[in-house]
Image 1 (cartoon, rainbow, N blue to C red):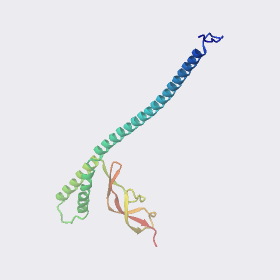
Image 2: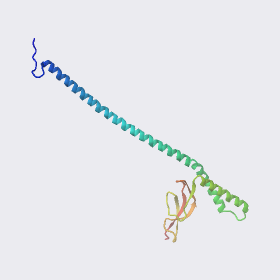
Image 3: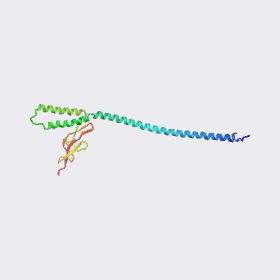
Image 4: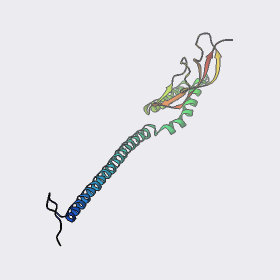
Length: 184
């Protein structure tokens, strides 16, 4: 049986069909490979993006941890200092109300003790909050009353009832104050 050959390339129609099928298979395989390449690129971009987010999150965690450590070191004594403040108040109050017949040597010892305690607190970053004559600031002052005043502007601290303290940039205890108000 004789098969017909194409005049152009000398192939039979069956061979030509097989060649076309093979070409289509190669094109389909190339298309699938291209799709796989696109899919792999997409997965790579997602993985890279996830990696960058995790790296940023880890860096933020490290910074927060470092800041927490610094805060812990800086404010470790804050609880003890807060418990010492009433003792400091009592010493100051005792000196303010010293009877006239007290021995001057004993009084000098109490003053030196108060001075040492204040220096010790200053050494760990504790400082009194300025109040009298200052404009009222709710971050530093706690108003518990008012007094009429012609000399000071309204909402200026007139009297400090209890001294306030801060440690570095934190308020340990606000100052209890009375504010100026306009006379009636």
